[in-house]
Image (tube, rainbow, N blue to C red; front, side, top):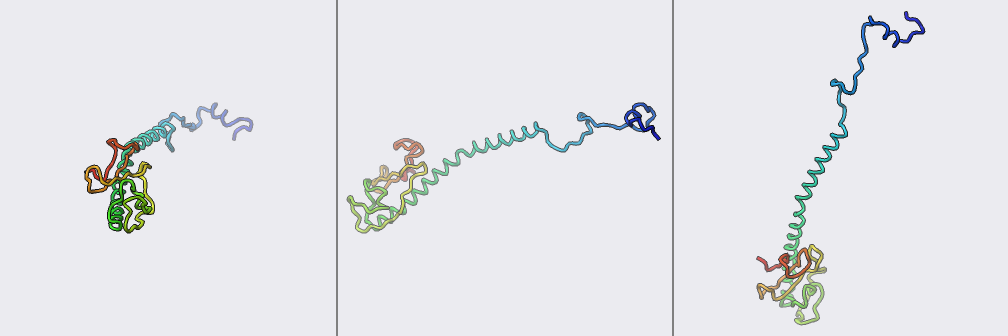
Length: 167
């Protein structure tokens, strides 16, 4: 039995024949088990994810423009159907002065249609927010109407304009 006033640590330090010694693992020990990620590893992974997302967003930048071009083509087809219905009832296409509003409101200028039926309740704008243009006769084919969009810049007469008479 040990003397009551002696601490165990003092006894261990003084007793060289003590049967075992306690091993304390230091943080630099190679036998350390890993239970999580370090801050550096997390920053590296987040950086890689950010680079991948940035590249994906950059690559998809042109997809929106292609969708807008498809929307214009779809609108041209819708207007083509509406104008065919107008011609069936009125006898001719609306004039350039009457424009697309003739599909929504009965024209009061010549040629006044024999029979008029509202074909469209609302005339949509192009995907860039500007009204579609209409002319009859068209520039390329005078016997047909021409629908056009001023394109992304909103200015008529540029190379970005879109026309229903483009081939």
